[in-house]
Amino acid sequence: MSELDELYQEVILDHNRSPRNFRTMAQANRKAQGYNPLCGDQVTVYLQLQDGVIKDISFQGSGCAISKASASIMTAELKGKSETEAKELFENVHNMLTGHANGAEQDSPKKVGKLAILSGVSKFPARVKCASLAWHTVISALKAEKEVVSTE
Amino acid sequence: MKVAHEIVTPKHLSKRLDVDKVRADFPILKQKIHGKPLVYLDNGATSQKPQVVVEALNRYYTAENSNIHRGVHFLSEQATAAYEAARQKIKRFVNARSEQEIIFVRGTTEAINLVAQSYGRTFLKPGDEIIVSAMEHHSNIVPWQILCEQTGARLRVIPINHDGELVLDEYRRLLSQKTKLVSVTHVSNALGTIVPVKEMVHLAHERQVPVLVDGAQAVPHLKVDVQELDCDFYAFSGHKLFGPTGVGILYGRLELLDAMPPYQGGGDMISLVTFEKTHYNVLPYKFEAGTPHIAGGIGLGAAIDYLEGLEWQQVTAHEHALLTYATAALTDIKGLRIIGTAKEKVGVVSFVFDHIHAHDVGTILDQEGVAVRAGHHCAMPVMQRFGVPATTRASFALYNTRHEIDILVKGIQRALEVFA
Image (cartoon, rainbow over all chains, first blue to last red; front, side, top):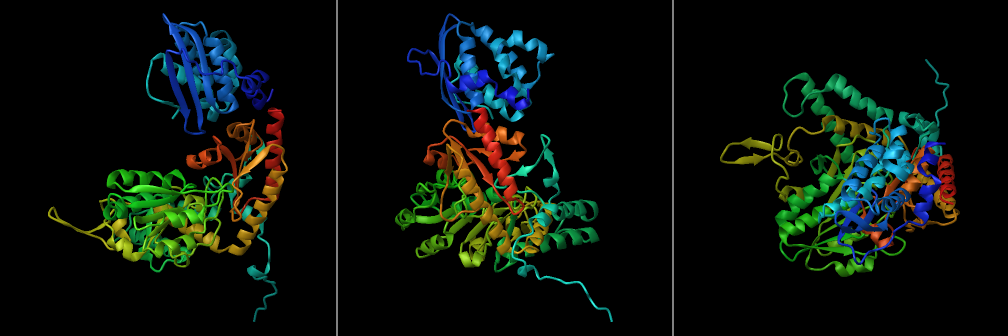
């Protein structure tokens, strides 16, 4: 598989075409905005957090295929996870995207679950911010930070 | 007596730019990217440098390096002479009246900030107005917003039409007794539009309003004559003009520069310093505090020498032919929409797809060896005007070819396949 095919795998293209949990959420009790000034990608992540567990999660925004697919897959993965689990997953995903995971190739699939589909991004340094934007935003929402998150 | 048998054809008699010869002057173009020949179409961001510029930098650091305007020793005198010779070249290049009107700065951004902070803070009052256009680069918006916060002046914006041209009637309406400065781009970086700055200067001068022209995107493509434009300030960067990064030029009308206070304080901009009072140096040094980018200035001079060895008419004809060819080829691609369709344009084609984000197009093109810009081009208001988050921009320079545009088109088709 070429690096490009690895980046734009069918699953990613599918999430880009029909993103999951792509909606606003009236009953959200946490919300954060993320913004990538480099390319203009914008994402808003909505959370319903109950007793430290993500009961519901959704997102809205505009961006490239990688940022949209990453956000979509992220919401699917984080639903039902605890705050601690979410933060742990963020660390693992971040390491995978930046190519810092130890023995990334073998280890990461079980540590990051379905998000392993995004591992091709690590070969495209310019796109790491696209893939991590939604993640930075959700972490900010969990911390209940008020400010707009920027990848810069 | 020796007889010359060589037949020399005068440059102006050969009609077309010899692109192969030009390309050979730019060593970086021989590179392969991801195993494919580099197709460099990101000239709006920065241009590549001819070998003569690289050599000028090399020579300076190898054999001439010394500080300027202060040494009595041989090297310092040599470096000073080379730096000041570059200023003379730039003066001739833009046809300024005097070398005192040519101020070395870091780039267009610093040039605009200099005018905003020196001229603006001195002469603007609460309620005064500054006019810019809706197609400005952020560097011709933000310095004025800062100035407005400092002085209580107000920023007014000339709108653009759907083709990406300034609405001149709106400009006429905006000009009033409150207008104290007009700052407008000569060529839009995101759209390629050539702005009728000469006419705009004329209209502003009817009200004694000075005009700054942001020439960053114009100087690599158009023959600029500041006296003909009659503008009061003209700003441009070296690196978009085949010169080094970190050096740029502010041209300013002598009377205005004379009336302006220094922008930064430090060495070189003074004639006498005591703790009671400091006397400022004469122009242009009054605005050149600290040791400048000496090698950069000399390198920019070398870039201008290089350009002057070419025929401008041939260069502009070549670039125009590229624009026409690219516009036709891209228009043929289903679903592709060109943003910026002004009648007068330089070689810039910005485009979007409804279902493919510019960033994805950029990555796929990169895999084909094609370098383009994908994003908002530091012109977010332009993106908002056209209702798009970002565009993919191919921007041409004198060394680009039709063949490269064919590769661009193939790359775009590859993106369409991926996102089919």
